Structures are given as structure tokens and as C-alpha cells.
Image (tube, rainbow, N blue to C red; front, side, top):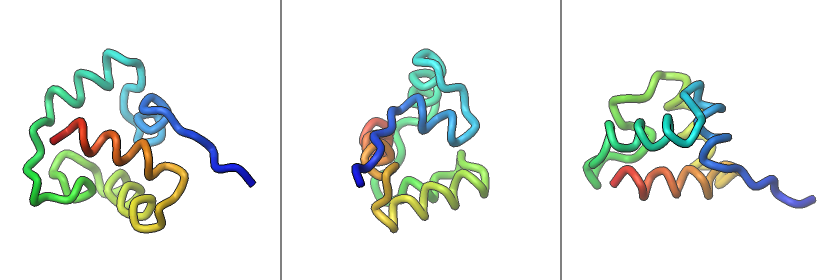
Length: 76
């Protein structure tokens, strides 16, 4: 079975955030830089549900992990 590739827009939609390119870029600009010592899922701007989703996907190295890593890098 081949892993599904997710986009940044898909991730933002999954998180319940504006998922068009301008919305993604606006979110990143508003929340960066995230301090390096704060794990992405512990950032103060996530809801409890968003935090749980991000943590689970990162820990399980699931389908979403590549695009979550990209978001993490863009927020640093």
C-alpha cells in the first residue's frame, strides 16, 4: 500500500484552519518564529484537538508527518 501524500493546504484543512495559500502564509507569518525548544505540537496557538492530532501524527510517523515537518521548519 502506498502512503498518501498530503499538501500544506490539506494539513490546514485537517486542522480546521484557512487552507488557501494566502491563509497558510498568513498563519505562518503570524506565528513565526517558534522557539526551537518548543515542540511544534506544544506551541501555544493550537487548540487541544489540533495539538493532539499533530502529536499523534508525529509520534506515529504517519502519512501526515512529512507535511507536519515542513510546517515545523517554516515556523522556525
